[in-house]
Length: 454
Image (cartoon, rainbow, N blue to C red; front, top):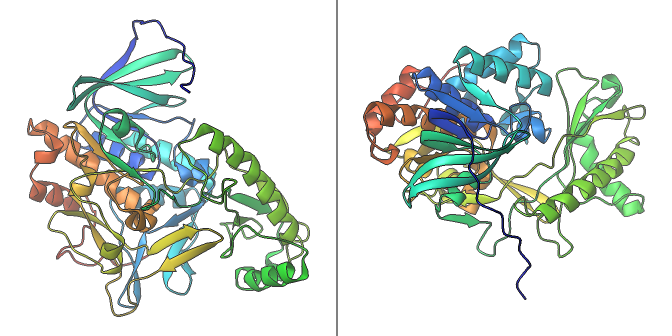
């Protein structure tokens, strides 16, 4: 039986502004895309639904950069540079950046303070004179024809507004803009199952001396608690690590599922509502267990983030779909615009499974082709971030912040090249884009010298 509908009267929508480049989404991909486009001289607007930047890294409380580094033949190198380096420098200047730490004995991640990230991102975009529109939720697009977007519609406290641009960049994470424009997309694996979301949280009041390297002992304590029947956990592979100040720890302990056991969908508002509520319930249950761990007895929850941490929704289909085999095989591409050093990170029912390229035999990173950032069917649209063109397995690796920074810088630079050459992004000269990225300090792989330092 069809659902009931209400007809909305036609209306004139006020034009908020006209830009050369409009970026939807202020996560790592959107930050880098907007900065790169504006740096190249384009009138650029970044639109973000929250009142701050950082994407899942702030809105979902991730508090940890993954994918900045790669294990290159047994040695760690920071392979994501360029605009990411500028942002990290600003976070560090604010005292909000940890030294990189080892994950699973194989790869580095790097924790940060979320407040410092927000402030540093504001400062970076201000330096490049990017216009920002906060508290604006993308709603739809207006098309000139089926290949070209005229305007993006956003909902704000001032009502619905339209924003016109020559080139649009979808860094929404969910591929919203691209889907509205008719670009093809996929959701989940062959059966439509997506990576499971999590509700992150942070603890304060931890005694660092007594806690020690608690991340090593907590998995065994979880097994004992379950065997004793005192606690039950939604997944294995819990992550509990200290932040910049050692009395504060981040906790990645939860997994959100529907009643049938499949992953909560970040595209379904009812799913998201249930997931937010269940996520907070799971966070409290995890906290109750952690209070039994030495050093955590007097800890307390200092932060539950504004939203659930979503790992996968739409993946836009572009000229190439990065695969899990590409990641594990450390594949190169003639049109590389950056690299990914993170392994497959598969959030499956009840567990998190990591799959690495051979270490130390391999170089530890795959290149990212420009074609994965160019959606099929729409001429003035680019995508970057976790909604870029990847398979389910490929996205489990290259969805993390390091690869998102690289993709974002590439699409922002590509948009500027397309505008300066009076062409569409699909037809720009790849060599020119690669040269521009390298000149700006980005590492794209190929025959480029390996970056030194962490």
